[in-house]
Image (cartoon, rainbow, N blue to C red):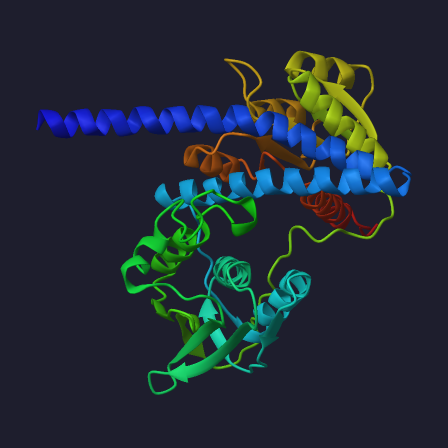
Length: 386
């Protein structure tokens, strides 16, 4: 019993350490991503453009690692919300082609996605992440030939087996269970970044378990590998749900609105303010509730509020937004940005009807969210009858 308690305490201490380290790492990466996004908008000569491109690639690699860690944390904490819907599988297939054909072309590989008319019942966003990991992994570990994504009916037609085939090196039988462990990679002892981080298949397995979608692996050395995910098949219906694409840049026109930014980290605030201004927004900035309230007392009427979650020991972003809305006497559209990955924060933000973005926030994702918040506000403030 004593050893069990010691092990539990050690696990809790490790979790606290990882959470704190994750938060502290996310802050500078978050600021760096916004600084580089702003830098990329400026005019450069060819040599500088290549340098900025390399900077963006490096930051993307860090963001991908942190996103993977966040996915693992959410799955372990059972904080992932599932929204089952029925939808045509071809929607996800088309999105996969859009996102991953460039990667295949860069490696001289062929990515074939077989047309499919099957409808399924699943969480479209989570199922897409599963397929994105499987196909991305297949492309990463395939040097010649290509990758095939296809669907076939199984179980007397009651299930759709989504299959990802590759012509890679294959996985030896003794490694086929280990590849689902975090940070485990076959034939990558030097941890080459181009071969990923060893999180994708762990996320795939945990996500499939969460959705109760059976996952199978079949592989032969020097021949290739096949992953299959079995999803319930349904009859076509009108409640089709399009998969949200968070990171697709919006149209280039400016975001014409006044936004109040509340952030106590000077570097992060400077990066965010500069990026928002480059999008055409008028920005007022504050480091805490008191300075934000002072701006409103001076006549500021923000159309949006963006607040960090951790501001000081007594107030957090949820309370700050609530008090500012009370002061303004209206429900100003607002979002939280945080480096915390605590599931309790996710639930608290949902209860407060606030969108929570996790640092590092990709600029395109932030831009899309702000456009949607502004559009929703315009719809709610639309013309009324006399």
